[in-house]
Length: 267
Image 1 (cartoon, rainbow, N blue to C red):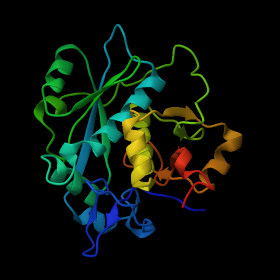
Image 2: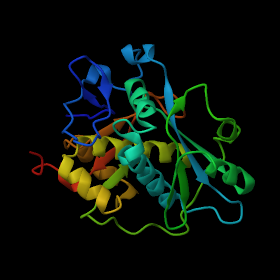
Image 3: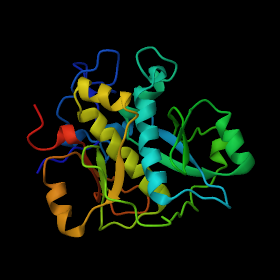
């Protein structure tokens, strides 16, 4: 079983950095003892801790569909990872590197009305789905959230699908959510973001560019319980949560099923 945990590319000096840059390379195999998601104490805990903030627009009269919110959050993570401001000497690049040197944390908060307008005024990127809007921001210190984001609620992101989502397009990436772990919509959005990030890191430069240029098409679906074991043991990137909130440490939450990463497609 090969479990891919959130990771970056280890440079000779031992610095763990984002592999997305002007001349991206395929990331090294992750070191299981240096995972940002391990619940045991690691060297990553000694580094300054950062978090990637995501804010979902949830208006009282017109909340987004749950699946669309998860998919939009995943695309938001991919968008900021590939944005030119996050790369090289861009204005967000150092924050992105610092975030990935420590634990990989993502926190989803909700906003409506004036809260959303204030959140939109802060530097970031808004990604729009069919019914969802999610704004992602460059990482901030764990205890240093901007005031207009810190006051937003984490709880209350319970969402439903008006009707069951259609089957995913097998030609596009699918983020399979665990059928065994019960998570709030906000937690699920963060986990979908983790899965998308792992897939991005595992792709070749050519596959990353193709995915980005296509607008990051993807689906988020809950796996069939009968298929879950095969998914988690089939060599695809797997998220095991550190257990900071809601769920048991080490829980397997997402399998990132990108067509280029399926068995037989890897180089």
